[in-house]
Length: 145
Image 1 (cartoon, one colour):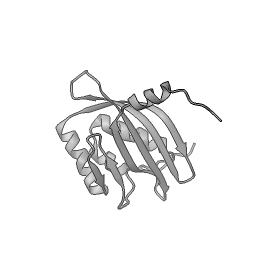
Image 2: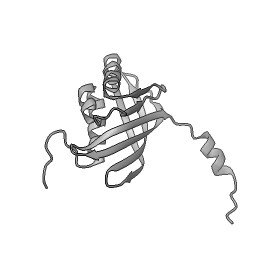
Image 3: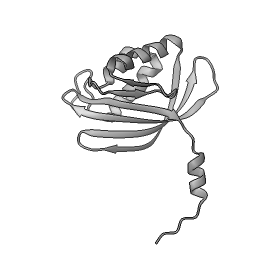
Image 4: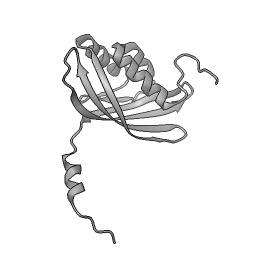
């Protein structure tokens, strides 16, 4: 199997794996290298803070890792992939610092684009999971016509 040059990711899953490995190491520089170098690159943290552009996104991860250590348990909910775009929907459980109590779950959507340097992250949106509306909808009988 042909090995890709360093920093070139052949699949969106490779970027995602590198992303979570960088979180485990607290490596903001590596996280920054996984993003597309686009003006409209977007990251929304669970707090609701919306960051547009590579510089603010990189700085936010530096700030997070300067303040604490994170461990993340990830569960894949769904993946969709086309020839140049991929969307991954995930669930995350966070462990912050030495606290063994889980935080979350969070619902996370990652959007990846394939370009000349392989697959890159173009959007990450993380928010608190609230399944109460879905539970209500699941309890309602639906008539199919």
